[in-house]
Length: 255
Length: 255
Image (cartoon, rainbow over the protein chains, first blue to last red):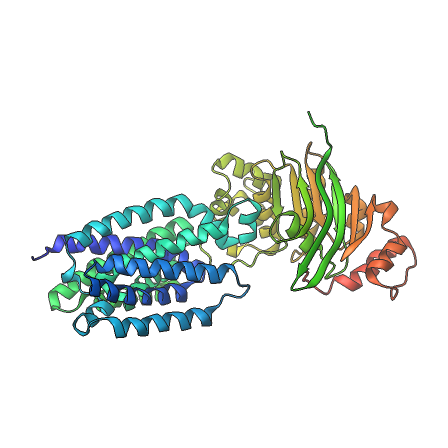
């Protein structure tokens, strides 16, 4: 079955927009590395899904949700953020994933293959994107207050631990949506780079979030089109477009 | 309506960190409309006491707020990233949707329409919070605390990191707020002069409770020696502050 270009662009736009939205919080929460590392956990999930013939997005999602509870538990129960521990845990899961993933599927699992995105994946991506936008909208103010000061949030009786957990679960969801498009290694980058780009340019939260979503969408669309044109792998091209936009924003910021 | 005039009752409060006793058997009542000053040397547990009554940290003993309590909390300092893209308006909107309420709160802390200088003008609303000076940010935090019509305001060392001119504004503001009906103010301070001038009740703290009552009656030489040790000498009342300052002014941190 050949998948047409508008459909792929639509998926790219959804992944770019949701990554940009969630990434905007991740960057100002100073959790960029956690977000990046988290995406590696998707690999063993994909491997197990491939072995049992389940949709890889679902397999990745299950692994990510389990890991998310792990990170959340560590961050809420320790005074210092256990970065080293997070690093160890994620490299371990990447290694396990590499061993478990069947050889022919490995490259695809790591860097994505947009041509393998099917109708079911499209439906899953749409449902996921709706959930991400709706839930983020609902918790956005509390999440932002937590970025400014967790104490202020707690003094207002906001259960900031719960809000952080919900947020991390959304990140797990967006990474799962991105795995077929960008692969486990690159989805993390899609969460971070558009947001970092937006932060260079924005002067308010509203503009920051719109710019971050916009940067994600533009990188996806241009990346997919360029990859098509040159018959290249779309995942790395999309990320390189995002990186180019980041560099541009950095230069603009300096002036 | 009100059978009990206390807004806060603390009894037998103990706080421990890693087996170290930070607060031991602290008990006091705060009456409605009272202005309570919490004083004590560095490491006396003043901020810890605040954090306990706000429910931010675990404690033993009982802390009971009146059922109708609405707390506005002004933290000692917030480490906000300089380049966080969040304007003052957006920050205040995290708590209050009504723009008129936000304008009113800013007016209360001394921002005016068309002031000659930006740091007294409502134009501050479109400034990002990372660009504010220490004094401006302090006033914005007070405005934040005033949103939602609280009946208790908690100030943790309201003038730390604020220049002398700003210091005066903060205390004249506290003085102005005292005139409001049904507003209880609890503040931490290390300046005795301020405590004598503004507080109706003082709580002297050095791990345990050393004195509690009207400042001019209970904050005497004996209490000060108990808090600060025998090493300090006294000449007359007015000089106490300079001795006091010698102990406290050079350090900026508390627990």
